[in-house]
Length: 202
Image (cartoon, rainbow, N blue to C red; front, side):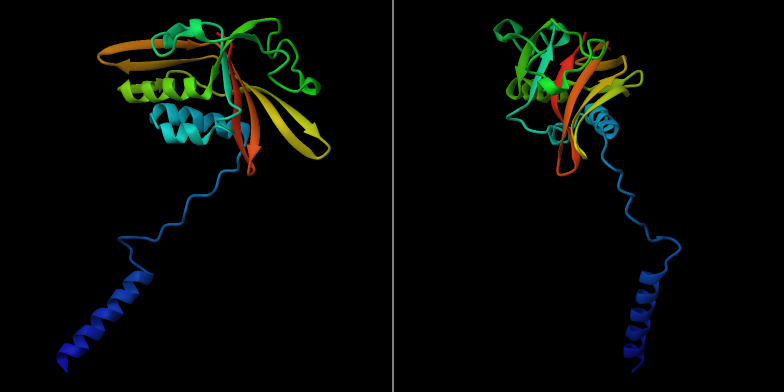
């Protein structure tokens, strides 16, 4: 009888502890941060600093539609052969003609190397795998935004980020890379802002 009483007492204590335990207070899930172009840029920075390729891929609107544009090989020269990439003017293909950005937002009549998702994916997988550390040394935040609106629907956005610096430590070497400006074209997928196109203005 005493054994049965002890079991019941332990069960009661367990239930009470489950309801209230000052040593292990109940936690609530963190509040959901609404999606916005600014939030997408923040998540992009976090994916870099955490070297998280899956987090980076989740920020892409469509790998089939994705393209990025750069004016020079720079620090990625060893990761992709820019001489084999097509040179394009992005004025007419970057956004629909009804939403061409002003020239002070995205310079016109400039030629860029076009990278497909295959190129971009390979570059980032190699960089995240080989880097010992990736750190932004100055803010990488949204500077300007331009929205394409049709009726009450926001179809897409152009997002320009501020200048920044990024430090990459790799195999005992340290590289400081200037980021003079980026323009991202974003679209929504299931109400989440994601990167559709990416232009480096370096």
